Structures are given as structure tokens and as C-alpha cells.
Image 1 (cartoon, rainbow, N blue to C red):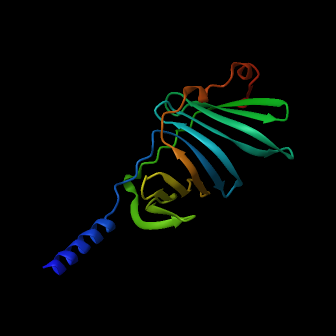
Image 2: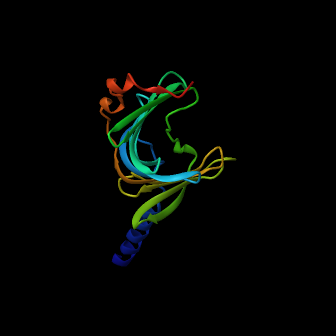
Image 3: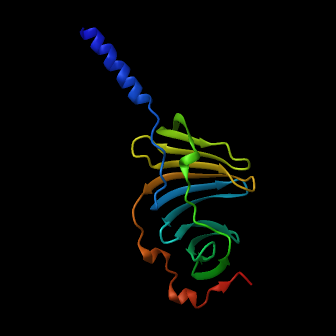
Length: 198
């Protein structure tokens, strides 16, 4: 009797361990440290601040500009529909430059995982992850890796509409509301910000 109970318990544990996790959900607000690589540009390590409900995002990081490193802040302030304004603030030595561009065709990324299929368990840098894929799109391709315990993003790889391969590797992730002041361009910079739309 004990042997039968042990076998049944083992089977039930095995079934529980093999169950497909629930569909991932993209956090509506977070901050993260990310390594962004794309086939058409140099890799960049950035701090990403994201607030979907208020249609805001910001990237802080270093870029190579005119033969030297410069610190940049890129702030997107969404408006109605697809409209919005992107501010580029560049700190180079003692100088600060500000540029902005009005965009009419941008939406804050908010992945919908309902069409993704669970592939199984994978490892990235010794981190155990769940792997999800959405290969059924004609021009796009998506792979999403999340931690198996906290379900936080580890990596998001995709081929975009233009056929360019992109990868977002997450090294730290905090899913929480973001301070609204992160998305405010200082008034002294707004007064000297150059319009790139013209």
C-alpha cells in the first residue's frame, strides 16, 4: 500500500512540475537595467523607466558621440493616439544639448503574450527561465524569457517589421509605479531645446 501511495505521489508531483505556466503579463510600470542590441547599431546599456498608463518612458545611458562618451537621457511623452514628443538630452563634458522631435507614429511598447506558446525551460547566464515564442507572424519573430519563480523578464528577442534583429537583456527589474518627475524635462533645458522636426 505504501509503495502504491509513493508511486502515485511521484506521478502527481511530476505532473505538477510539467504544467504549463500561466501566460506572461507585461508590467504596466517598471524600471530596469537593460542591454539593448540591434543588428543595425552599437549595443547600449541603459536604465529604462516605463509608465504605460501615463504613456511615458525614458532611457538613460552612455553613447559614443564625436569621438567621446556622452551621457544621454531620452524621454518620450505620449500624447493622443500615436502622437507624442521625444526629447534627447546629451551631456558632453560641461555642455548640455537638448533636441526634440514630434512623432506621429509611435506607441509605447506593451507586449500581448496571448498568442505566445510555452516552449519549456531554458537557461540564460545560469538563470532558469520559461521560454515563450510567437513564430506565427509573417514578418516578426518573438522569443521571451522570464524567471521561473518571480516571472520577471530576463530577455526579449525579436525581429521587427523592418527585418532587424533586436534583443533586450534585463539585468535588474523593479515592477512598481514610477516617479512622475522622471519624465519632466528641466525648464532651463526646454528654453534652449532644438526642434528636430523642421
